Image 1 (cartoon, helix red, strand yellow):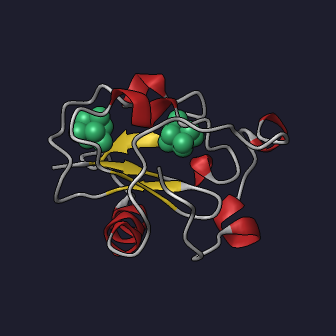
Image 2 (cartoon, helix red, strand yellow; image 1 turned 135 degrees about the vertical axis):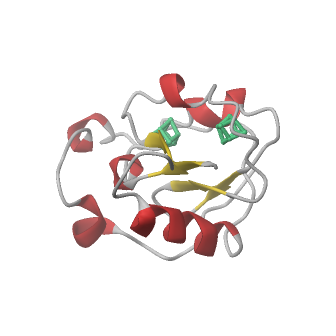
Length: 112
Ligand code: SF4
Ligand code: SF4
């Protein structure tokens, strides 16, 4: 089992999650974060910290696509352990639908 980040994170990146993860298993893309499923210890402390409700346990149904995305990009993007500044328009995209199709970027973030 692991926790996964869904597309609700795209363009939000509040990054409250990275502050609480005890094993630093978040990775940063250009406009979202992902969790490395091999490093996540399933502690669950990040889930309630996410203001966008983007983090879910993979025991919930219908998350296969997001688990695969987390697995793939956590191997390509840099590790992030410190909270940075969220984009200025983050709140405007909170709760928006179909964010993956509209905005997903495979480009890496800066990491920290
Ligand atoms: S707190 Fe939630 S929306 Fe923000 S970066 Fe973490 S997973 Fe993404
Ligand atoms: S469940 Fe725990 S170990 Fe996994 S990403 Fe969240 S805080 Fe990190």
